[in-house]
Length: 74
Image 1 (spheres, rainbow, N blue to C red):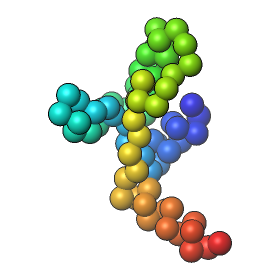
Image 2 (cartoon, helix red, strand yellow):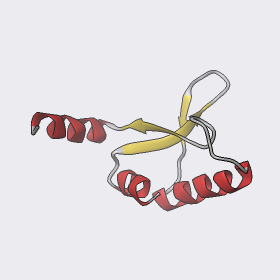
Image 3 (cartoon, helix red, strand yellow):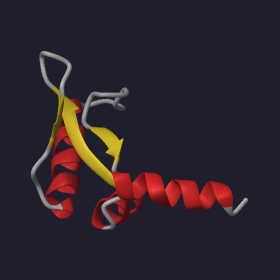
Image 4 (cartoon, rainbow, N blue to C red):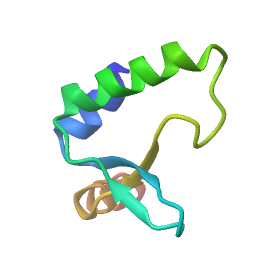
């Protein structure tokens, strides 16, 4: 969770879920509130989550730029 929070704090990813029309809806919450929401949903799930059970992450433009820099430096 600390890695996710750091990535959210640095605006490298955004968190949200897909709606009924398969459109990604970003959660308009602080990184701390997103982490709290994930933890709460995980606690009530009662099992290990599968992809898409709790949250979906999408990379931001800033995240794309940072990833490209990392790839070029290798």
